[in-house]
Length: 359
Image (cartoon, rainbow, N blue to C red):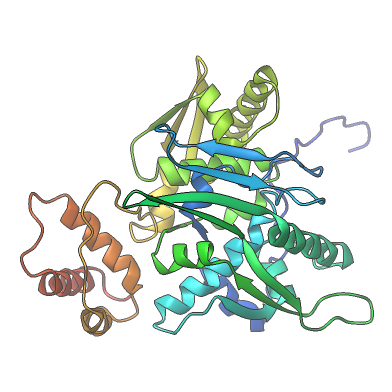
């Protein structure tokens, strides 16, 4: 209407850029987004949109172990650069769940990655991807591992190698070949990964993404997780002043209260304490099989390879690694571990399939 001054408030989310997905890319979206827990726990990625050239060092409370992140001349890898790793981890985990052999080196279409991570597929999108790959390759991580009284210092990058296989005359990359670092690949092999909501790729602010990562890592399916503002700022890696950081967090909490845009969790800041609770839609949207958490502080029950193969027959079409996680979580809650783990796991899978059928 002419003269109508009513304005529609902009949603905090980025637009969903690829609603009509290409048919040949459909399998890309079957790969559930996954993030490694190690980089979720530590602020390895920068929140800044400008080159961040600070050297970061974080030490364990006991002072015996540390992790140090050193940027290149182009700065630290950013939270948005992390999309590349999430895509790679998701593809490898999808292959692992299908019983395929996995490798540190993978090859795929650059356009597939851009679409799956809700990025633009124009020239700017390809240039941003190239910049992200360079920062991931050149950001250096150093950490010490102490076993048996011996300290081992490990220095590596998040990506060992990047190869742009072909470029068009316009300069757009077509095929990519990426070799993941041992650190990232070992996290995948050890299933030290967590499922992420696809809406993660629509979060506009780097701090929103970081808060969601911390919620997935530390809250999971618990009724509530709390963290003080000072410790939260350290975990996010924010370089803002204390006053500004508090304002930024309060704004995110307020925006989520208005728009319900943060995936899976509710964030409330009360007296400089951030309270995080799962939203009602968390288990409804994912189901218990995608709301899984790694067991910490509990025993890990080994299973024979042939047991996993048999389980695929007992519970066809189900993610076998999800079933392992669900069963281990259940077993860890019992007073004693099962006397025959392989038999117990197969029985668990049989009951699971009888109750739920095919996914």
